[in-house]
Image (tube, rainbow, N blue to C red; front, side, top):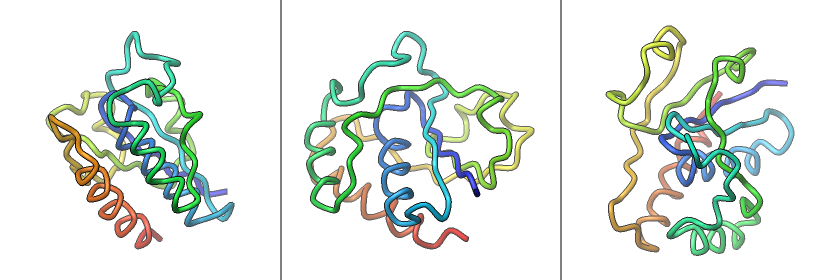
Length: 135
C-alpha cells in the first residue's frame, strides 16, 4: 500500500489535519502518517490538549474525519522507509540536514500565532485541495 508522510514542527496541528484528510479521501487505497520535527517532550501527548485543537477536531468531525485520538510523534528516518511521498508542512529553513537527503515536497502551511476558527477552516480548505490532487 502507498504510504504518504506529513511532517510539521511539533506534530500538533498541520500534519495531524493532513493525515486525517488524506485517510478520509483515499479511504484505504493509500495511507498517511503524521510526524513532527521537534516533538521532544511532547512525544505521546494527545493533540486534543493543545490550544485550538478542540475546535479543529469538531470542524473535522463535521466532515466525517476524527483525529481526536492522535498523539504527537517524533520523526525518525525509520518512519520514512517505503514512503511514496514525503510532504513537509513547515518552513523549509527548519528542516534538519539528515532529512534533506530525502525527496520531499514542501507546502509551507503556516501555523498562525493566534489560532482562530477561521484560520483552522482556511488551513483545512487548503490541505483538502492539495491532498485531493496527490497522485
